[in-house]
Image (cartoon, rainbow, N blue to C red; front, side, top):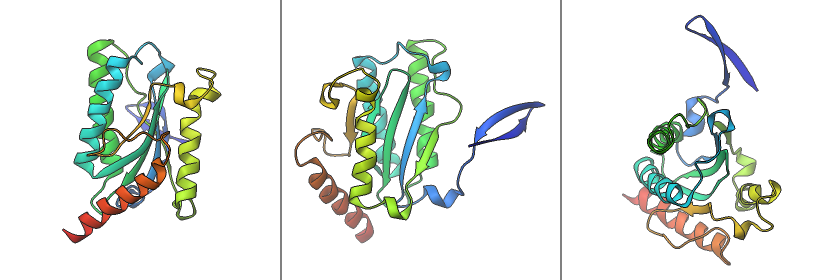
Length: 193
C-alpha cells in the first residue's frame, strides 16, 4: 500500500513505514530491494562477491545477522535479524543501499535500486523458528518460481551472512539448527557485555 506525499511540487508514491521502533532491536525484517525500472545485466559473480563484502560490513556495523538472501536479475530479497537492542534496520538498509548503489553506478552507469525498498517486519506470531524458516523458504524459492533454475541449490546468488561463519549456507543440511545456536550465542554475548 502506498501513500502520496508532496515533494518539490510533484507527487511521488512512497511506501508506508511502520513507526521507528519496529525496526530496532531484535526484530526480523524481510527487505525486498528492486532495481530501478527492473533493469537487468548487473547480476554477475564479481558483483556477488562485492555484494557479500558490503553485507558483511552492514551486518557488523548495525549488529545484524542475515539468515538468507537471494539476488534475482532485477531485485533482491534479504532477511535481516537484529542481534541486540542497538540494532537499527532502517539505518542499516539506508547504509547498505547507498553503498550498493555506488557499486552499481561504478560498473553500470545509471543502474541503481529504486528510491525505496519494500519491507515486511515479522510480527510476533511470525518470529518463531518455523515462521522464520517459512519466510526463508519463500526467499530461497524465488529463482525456482521465476523459472531460472529447477532447484534452489542451483542458483549461485543465494546465501547467508553471519559474521565469523563464512562457510554456512542456508541450503546445507542442518543449517537452521546451526543458525539458531549461533544467533543465540551472539545475542547472549551482547547481553552480557
